[in-house]
Image 1 (cartoon, rainbow, N blue to C red):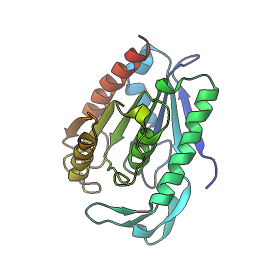
Image 2 (tube, rainbow, N blue to C red):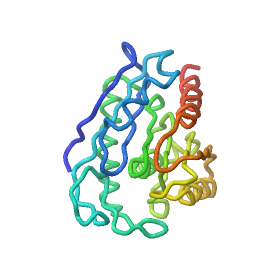
Image 3 (cartoon, rainbow, N blue to C red):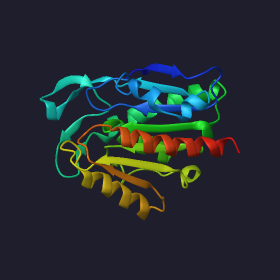
Image 4 (spheres, rainbow, N blue to C red):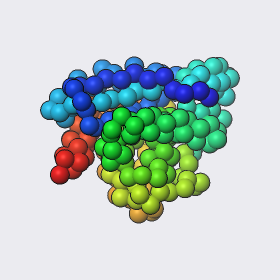
Length: 223
């Protein structure tokens, strides 16, 4: 895998907050670009959004078809059987984006990581294992694929976590989101869980809740 290509959107000059948002299987960094104008918090102060594009990989559950993917999905069983080596390789590439932001002068506490579906699984792995304190994590319509093998970072033991999921999701059933919440609680985290009357997507109500969550995180960084 090579270094990731990205879409960057700055909502003002000289942002001191960076949000890295990972898309789902078969999508691209442009997937959540239209959401940016809906956020209030990033209109009130400059924020940098980075939307990476996943590498092209063959995906077993789709007949080996090559498509944008953070890792291969080997089976759509109840808990998902995934290629964790590829997942961690993708997490490593996203970690390089965090380092690039650090080199641009953004402190690690001002970097927030999130993702949708496959991207959320990578975000879980990276955010909870990252050696320096991050600003927060949001996991949308996703699952905690590496919970049994992750090397947790003490620096992010109190990481604020937002989980959002659709009640009628036919792709990543809500029980996987609830299982992630329970597993996180068992590990000592205090995730916020929100569910919505939607399928495998994003809705305006979720955007509003995420807006409030991110606004709280950013207000803490300014104190």
